[in-house]
Image (tube, rainbow, N blue to C red; front, top):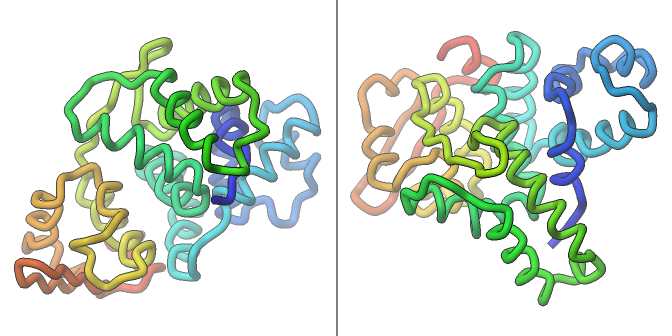
Length: 249
């Protein structure tokens, strides 16, 4: 596993509009100091560069050009909103193995169990268990583990998935039509196999498998996707380009 501290860094970043700015390419012709002065309230150049590096590694990187085009188009045409934050969550989960691991072992089990809260202690326990087998974590102190656990929950809160201060409560998401279509287009590219029915990424729709498939088959999505389902294998093909989809849904 490729482990870094980007969860820690991005969990502490004050303004996620900076992510939108870099993905959209609004800052490509500006110096670091110009971006820092114009777009953020980050006071020191050292802190700004730390945030910028984490954005480049975990946010402003894409599995393929289709995902890059879709997210760049979304970021360039609207302000930071709930849909964009979901896209940030999905894309960072593809880029950051530790985030995806914690989502798999902590967040989604809590979400699908119907529980209402999630604790930093659960995340710390998961990290300590991983530390026993993962070389990238062996040098992490107990303090680093606990800070990362706390920042992981803060990160999910910034993505709009949790709420609260000391006790973090699950926000159960019901994707809008636009969000669901964008998710499908993301999923098609994120998944390496053609059978989305067995996709490890399906849970990122925040739906159980049965309801996810049922929603895919609804007539209102036929202008966006071509769906084939035989009771076992689910195949979904996009009908629009990844640049068009942000305009059409």
